[in-house]
Image (tube, rainbow, N blue to C red; front, side, top):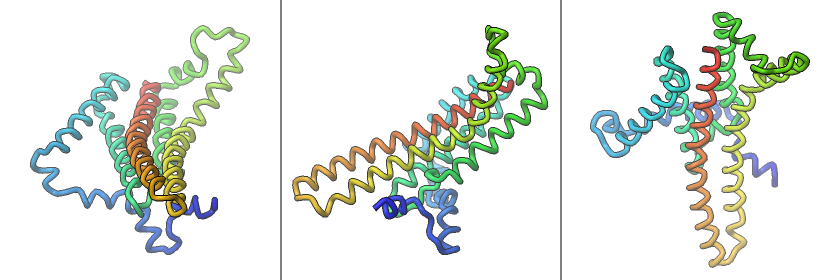
Length: 224
Protein backbone atom coordinates (compact mmCIF):
# COMPACT_ATOMS: atom_id res chain seq x y z
CA UNK A 1 0.00 0.00 0.00
CA UNK A 2 2.78 2.43 0.93
CA UNK A 3 4.67 1.63 -2.27
CA UNK A 4 1.67 2.37 -4.47
CA UNK A 5 0.82 5.43 -2.38
CA UNK A 6 4.20 7.10 -2.77
CA UNK A 7 4.46 6.04 -6.40
CA UNK A 8 2.41 9.11 -7.34
CA UNK A 9 5.55 11.18 -6.67
CA UNK A 10 7.88 9.03 -8.77
CA UNK A 11 8.83 10.20 -12.26
CA UNK A 12 8.32 7.74 -15.10
CA UNK A 13 11.19 5.33 -15.61
CA UNK A 14 11.57 5.86 -19.37
CA UNK A 15 14.12 8.45 -20.47
CA UNK A 16 11.67 10.39 -22.64
CA UNK A 17 8.96 10.51 -19.98
CA UNK A 18 11.50 11.38 -17.29
CA UNK A 19 12.74 14.35 -19.31
CA UNK A 20 9.21 15.54 -20.00
CA UNK A 21 8.29 15.23 -16.32
CA UNK A 22 11.02 17.58 -15.19
CA UNK A 23 10.52 19.80 -18.24
CA UNK A 24 6.95 20.38 -17.05
CA UNK A 25 8.49 22.80 -14.56
CA UNK A 26 8.92 25.26 -17.42
CA UNK A 27 6.79 23.92 -20.28
CA UNK A 28 3.61 24.96 -18.53
CA UNK A 29 4.40 28.56 -19.42
CA UNK A 30 3.60 27.68 -23.03
CA UNK A 31 -0.04 27.11 -22.08
CA UNK A 32 -0.53 30.65 -20.79
CA UNK A 33 -2.72 32.46 -23.34
CA UNK A 34 -0.88 34.90 -25.56
CA UNK A 35 -3.46 37.64 -24.96
CA UNK A 36 -2.74 37.41 -21.23
CA UNK A 37 0.50 39.31 -21.82
CA UNK A 38 -1.00 41.90 -24.18
CA UNK A 39 -4.51 42.97 -23.21
CA UNK A 40 -5.23 43.64 -19.52
CA UNK A 41 -7.67 41.30 -17.84
CA UNK A 42 -8.89 40.62 -14.34
CA UNK A 43 -6.33 37.86 -13.80
CA UNK A 44 -3.41 39.85 -15.22
CA UNK A 45 -4.28 42.90 -13.10
CA UNK A 46 -4.56 40.73 -9.99
CA UNK A 47 -1.20 39.10 -10.70
CA UNK A 48 0.43 42.50 -11.34
CA UNK A 49 -0.91 43.81 -8.04
CA UNK A 50 0.42 40.74 -6.23
CA UNK A 51 3.86 41.13 -7.81
CA UNK A 52 3.98 44.82 -6.88
CA UNK A 53 3.03 43.99 -3.29
CA UNK A 54 5.79 41.38 -3.07
CA UNK A 55 8.27 43.83 -4.59
CA UNK A 56 7.50 46.42 -1.92
CA UNK A 57 7.77 43.87 0.88
CA UNK A 58 11.03 42.40 -0.39
CA UNK A 59 12.40 45.91 -0.88
CA UNK A 60 11.75 46.61 2.80
CA UNK A 61 13.52 43.40 3.85
CA UNK A 62 16.55 43.92 1.61
CA UNK A 63 17.02 47.65 2.19
CA UNK A 64 17.21 50.58 -0.22
CA UNK A 65 20.67 49.67 -1.53
CA UNK A 66 19.53 46.38 -3.09
CA UNK A 67 16.29 47.29 -4.87
CA UNK A 68 17.21 45.44 -8.06
CA UNK A 69 17.59 42.17 -6.13
CA UNK A 70 13.85 41.89 -5.53
CA UNK A 71 13.32 40.56 -9.06
CA UNK A 72 15.19 37.38 -8.07
CA UNK A 73 12.87 36.62 -5.18
CA UNK A 74 9.71 37.67 -7.02
CA UNK A 75 10.71 35.31 -9.85
CA UNK A 76 11.43 32.59 -7.29
CA UNK A 77 7.95 33.01 -5.81
CA UNK A 78 6.38 32.91 -9.29
CA UNK A 79 8.21 29.72 -10.26
CA UNK A 80 7.31 27.88 -7.05
CA UNK A 81 3.66 28.94 -6.92
CA UNK A 82 3.22 28.02 -10.59
CA UNK A 83 4.60 24.51 -10.04
CA UNK A 84 2.62 24.06 -6.83
CA UNK A 85 -0.64 24.81 -8.63
CA UNK A 86 0.43 22.75 -11.63
CA UNK A 87 0.87 19.75 -9.34
CA UNK A 88 -2.75 20.01 -8.18
CA UNK A 89 -3.96 19.11 -11.66
CA UNK A 90 -4.68 15.40 -12.32
CA UNK A 91 -1.86 13.33 -13.82
CA UNK A 92 0.59 16.25 -13.72
CA UNK A 93 4.06 15.74 -12.25
CA UNK A 94 4.71 17.81 -9.10
CA UNK A 95 8.33 18.89 -9.23
CA UNK A 96 8.19 20.88 -5.97
CA UNK A 97 7.42 17.71 -4.01
CA UNK A 98 10.94 16.43 -4.75
CA UNK A 99 14.04 17.45 -2.80
CA UNK A 100 15.97 17.48 -6.07
CA UNK A 101 13.92 20.47 -7.17
CA UNK A 102 13.67 22.29 -3.85
CA UNK A 103 17.36 21.83 -3.01
CA UNK A 104 18.26 23.07 -6.49
CA UNK A 105 16.52 26.31 -5.58
CA UNK A 106 17.63 26.76 -1.96
CA UNK A 107 21.23 25.51 -2.00
CA UNK A 108 22.63 27.76 -4.79
CA UNK A 109 20.94 30.80 -3.23
CA UNK A 110 22.35 30.02 0.22
CA UNK A 111 25.85 29.37 -1.16
CA UNK A 112 25.73 32.64 -3.08
CA UNK A 113 24.72 34.57 0.03
CA UNK A 114 27.43 32.95 2.13
CA UNK A 115 30.24 33.45 -0.39
CA UNK A 116 29.26 37.06 -1.01
CA UNK A 117 28.89 37.79 2.69
CA UNK A 118 32.15 36.24 3.84
CA UNK A 119 34.14 37.90 1.05
CA UNK A 120 32.64 41.39 1.22
CA UNK A 121 31.32 41.65 4.80
CA UNK A 122 33.63 39.40 6.79
CA UNK A 123 33.40 41.28 10.09
CA UNK A 124 29.64 41.52 9.81
CA UNK A 125 29.38 37.76 9.23
CA UNK A 126 31.59 37.04 12.27
CA UNK A 127 29.41 39.38 14.36
CA UNK A 128 26.35 37.34 13.40
CA UNK A 129 27.87 34.26 15.04
CA UNK A 130 27.66 35.86 18.49
CA UNK A 131 24.34 37.59 19.31
CA UNK A 132 24.59 40.89 21.15
CA UNK A 133 24.59 40.55 24.93
CA UNK A 134 25.86 36.96 24.99
CA UNK A 135 27.88 36.20 28.20
CA UNK A 136 31.57 35.47 27.48
CA UNK A 137 31.28 31.95 28.90
CA UNK A 138 28.57 31.06 26.38
CA UNK A 139 30.24 32.57 23.32
CA UNK A 140 31.92 29.34 22.11
CA UNK A 141 28.61 27.48 22.34
CA UNK A 142 26.72 30.27 20.59
CA UNK A 143 29.22 30.18 17.73
CA UNK A 144 28.59 26.45 17.31
CA UNK A 145 24.81 26.86 17.53
CA UNK A 146 24.71 29.79 15.07
CA UNK A 147 27.02 27.98 12.66
CA UNK A 148 24.87 24.85 12.75
CA UNK A 149 21.72 26.94 12.36
CA UNK A 150 23.24 28.62 9.34
CA UNK A 151 24.36 25.36 7.73
CA UNK A 152 20.93 23.72 7.89
CA UNK A 153 19.10 26.67 6.32
CA UNK A 154 19.03 25.35 2.73
CA UNK A 155 17.91 21.95 4.00
CA UNK A 156 15.05 23.37 6.05
CA UNK A 157 13.89 25.49 3.12
CA UNK A 158 13.90 22.50 0.80
CA UNK A 159 12.32 20.01 3.22
CA UNK A 160 9.58 22.42 4.33
CA UNK A 161 8.38 23.00 0.78
CA UNK A 162 8.64 19.37 -0.33
CA UNK A 163 7.01 18.00 2.83
CA UNK A 164 4.01 20.30 2.61
CA UNK A 165 3.45 19.41 -1.04
CA UNK A 166 3.75 15.68 -0.32
CA UNK A 167 1.39 15.81 2.68
CA UNK A 168 -1.46 17.39 0.74
CA UNK A 169 -1.13 15.03 -2.20
CA UNK A 170 -1.06 12.02 0.10
CA UNK A 171 -4.28 13.12 1.80
CA UNK A 172 -6.02 13.55 -1.55
CA UNK A 173 -4.77 10.16 -2.73
CA UNK A 174 -5.87 8.40 0.48
CA UNK A 175 -9.35 9.91 0.31
CA UNK A 176 -9.81 9.11 -3.36
CA UNK A 177 -8.74 5.51 -2.77
CA UNK A 178 -11.59 4.90 -0.32
CA UNK A 179 -14.31 6.03 -2.75
CA UNK A 180 -15.16 2.68 -4.45
CA UNK A 181 -15.92 0.97 -1.13
CA UNK A 182 -18.36 3.61 0.15
CA UNK A 183 -22.09 4.08 -0.30
CA UNK A 184 -23.61 6.83 -2.43
CA UNK A 185 -24.22 9.12 0.53
CA UNK A 186 -20.71 8.73 1.83
CA UNK A 187 -19.28 9.24 -1.64
CA UNK A 188 -21.06 12.61 -1.85
CA UNK A 189 -19.62 13.57 1.54
CA UNK A 190 -16.18 12.36 0.41
CA UNK A 191 -16.42 14.47 -2.75
CA UNK A 192 -17.25 17.55 -0.69
CA UNK A 193 -14.33 16.80 1.62
CA UNK A 194 -11.95 16.51 -1.32
CA UNK A 195 -13.13 19.82 -2.75
CA UNK A 196 -12.51 21.53 0.59
CA UNK A 197 -9.12 19.84 0.86
CA UNK A 198 -8.26 20.97 -2.66
CA UNK A 199 -9.08 24.55 -1.67
CA UNK A 200 -6.86 24.12 1.39
CA UNK A 201 -4.05 22.80 -0.79
CA UNK A 202 -4.42 25.82 -3.07
CA UNK A 203 -3.89 28.05 -0.05
CA UNK A 204 -0.91 25.94 1.04
CA UNK A 205 0.59 26.26 -2.45
CA UNK A 206 0.54 30.05 -2.16
CA UNK A 207 1.65 30.17 1.48
CA UNK A 208 4.61 27.84 1.01
CA UNK A 209 5.77 29.78 -2.05
CA UNK A 210 5.56 32.98 -0.04
CA UNK A 211 7.42 31.46 2.94
CA UNK A 212 10.20 30.15 0.70
CA UNK A 213 10.66 33.53 -1.00
CA UNK A 214 10.45 35.57 2.22
CA UNK A 215 12.96 33.39 4.10
CA UNK A 216 15.34 33.57 1.14
CA UNK A 217 14.97 37.35 1.19
CA UNK A 218 15.68 37.46 4.94
CA UNK A 219 18.80 35.35 4.49
CA UNK A 220 19.97 37.74 1.78
CA UNK A 221 19.21 40.76 3.97
CA UNK A 222 21.35 39.40 6.82
CA UNK A 223 24.57 39.75 4.84
CA UNK A 224 24.07 43.49 4.22
